[in-house]
Length: 236
Image (tube, rainbow, N blue to C red; front, side):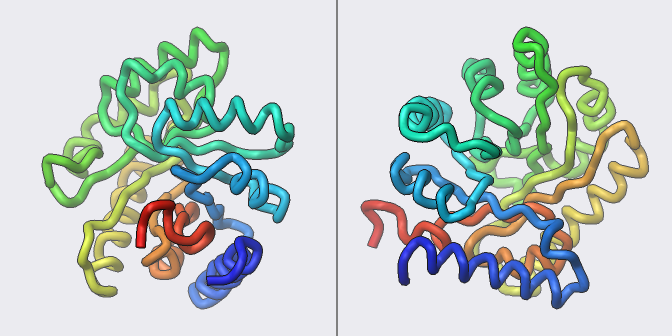
């Protein structure tokens, strides 16, 4: 699969080409390198190759990496995204570590994070996670419940709601993927019209297998792990 530099460059080319196919400016799309399970050394290599957005999903692992990286390199200009399910009892640490949290999946969690952000003296950017599968093991707001809850969420003074995030269900063909991504875009448009207090500027959708389709359907953030870093350690 080539070197990390080659994979990163290839991913950026694919992002640019997908943006151009849909008449969009590639500069308006953030590539978040999903660095879960990756070593601090690999993350630092990607940073030195020009990558600036990184995504982690486990708070404890995230903390350990941040501490190790701080001793290795200041990594100026990095934006850290928390993309995994977050438990309320880890909200303060998540708020300390993260520049943006993409996985707000309950009103309760949002309230806790709002309180923790207030105590930290920061306004925390967040995305609201949407689940279209209705599978019990999946996290996220159901679309219909989010439309009712979004008014309170955008009113929390220490959170800055910047948009929506979703993970497409497994096993969909291209038409199925496009349908999911269009539903998320349509939901965001409705929320932006109903609750203009939110920023609603980001749609985080698309991963290594489907990010080009997501970009064509309006993604502003794509979360890419394997296509940049290769297979995760321990996987064949």
